[in-house]
Amino acid sequence: MTTGTALLTDQYELTMLQAALASGAAHRRAVFEVFARRLPGARRYGVVAGTGRFLDALEDFRFDEQDIEYLCSAGVVDEPTGEFLAGYRFSGSVYGYREGEAFFPGSPIMVVEGTFAEAVLLETLILSILNHDCAIAAAASRMAQAAGDRPLIEMGSRRTHEHAAVAAARAAYLCGFASTSNLMAGHLYGVPTAGTAAHAFTLLHDSEEDAFRAQLDSLGRGTTLLVDTYDVAKAVRTAVELAGPGLGAVRIDSGDLAVVAVEVRRLLDELGAGHTRIVVTSDLDEFAIAALAAAPVDAYGVGTALSTGSGHPTASLVYKLVAREDRTGTLQPVAKASVGKPSVGGRKWAYRRTGADGTATAEVLTREPVDTEDRPLLAELVRDGKVVGRESLEAARERHRATLAELPLEACSLSPGDPAVPTIFK
Image 1 (cartoon, one colour):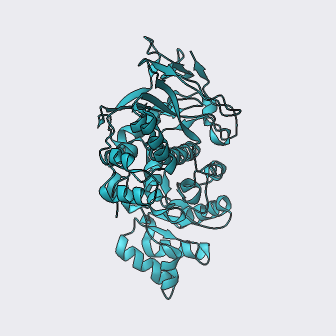
Image 2 (image 1 turned 180 degrees about the vertical axis):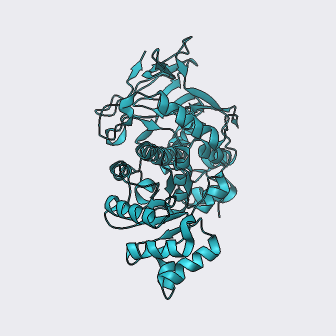
Image 3 (image 1 turned 180 degrees about the horizontal axis):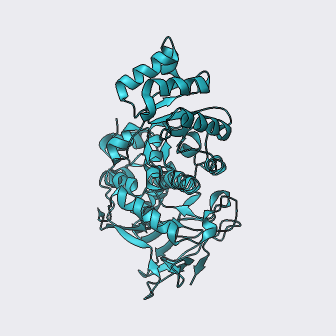
């Protein structure tokens, strides 16, 4: 069984490679860019996520003997192409926006330079990672802004593919979530993990009191007790009676959350548990979180909406050839002119322009590096095939906080609208 990432590739990348090898064009220098023509759902900004995962996957992008045997026997590639794939190693360069950075329509969030043969094979790998992670990150960022200083717990693992769940937890933490229920995300990426009990634990026991006592005995008074299995008010009284005023939190997972939270807060205060927190779950998204802003809620648990990009499970990113070497060895801009799907030719450099108050005013794209006070956005990630741009998840998380502070106020709006920052091609 193959263990690398090379077969995470669409067939047409290999058929293009085969034809280009035969025509002699495969070794021409080429530049591909990753960008979105528009932001899904008319959102105000996108968020870069998944770059670190791509760099890991790139290092494992190798065609082993089993891969090549499969491709040749299935008639996907011919023998000369199989021989090329056996020695495939990406030796080019990759530049990209750092994780946590905001992006807008046209932003070249990743630039891949190399031969056509090397670069064309990376399309599906790059897009599958970035489209997923950027979509989750955009949803997570909106949810975090709606939540304000109230913590968010990512708990969507049971609503998506097992590996997508790990990536989603990583992207959510990058964009402001405090923790995840996914242990693999904790193991691989150091994301703080959290979790206590489901309704099944209460139903297992002879009574709710027995269930609460067992959980408190095992996890201590600081645990979170789920109080909506039967009667909420009765459960809250039982919880405080058993744990005392030091009970960490109660969780509400059903009903009109705003109304129930008010009733639970009043009851907790009456019982002397004024410091016991209220955690709410149950199909929350950024709009539901915003609607609960005035409710006495201390934390939110988000599942399905987060792991599916809150209705937009892709970031609409594309991977397009923007420059290629001609017969004289000169790099020439190329671009599609397709109706509704145009692109701008030429390798781009990107800068974030800010006003005197530090607020972003434009995304400036140029075809040559320029000496400017605008902040450069493209960082070197891969040089001569070697990864040089790795960074910690905590650094990306901090960058996202700084990026949000730089965006204009309208970026915080949850309603559909124009991008918060215009893109200017120069």
